[in-house]
Length: 142
Image 1 (cartoon, rainbow, N blue to C red):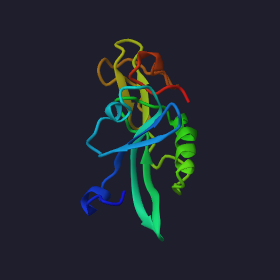
Image 2: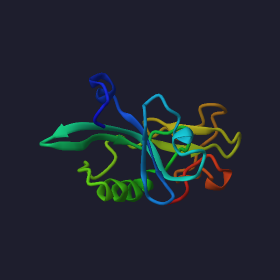
Image 3: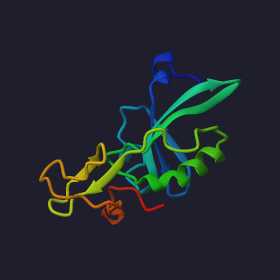
């Protein structure tokens, strides 16, 4: 992270955890799928850092990625990747996005305020994560 401007460091980065468990970072305006080279991932989202003592620590982290729509249960892959590179972290997503695929129109939805209805066709959304990793554009089940 050294070599970045103060402005760049002040905003979160795009991140993915690849299938090998590696943490990959890109500037925030980067697409998660591009960050992962188009491959499946264990998790994806946004991550913000702050200086701590002589190093860095994770200040904010989410699974907010509309390219992969990872489930909140992808956290263990994230914590393993962060621990592997020695980054202290909050222990859970500081913002946990809830994604569901509509069984009627197949649109991927970001569930807000626990309103499990499709934003496109108003169909009921399932309570459990159902974004299919086999489609190649979503996170692999961790």
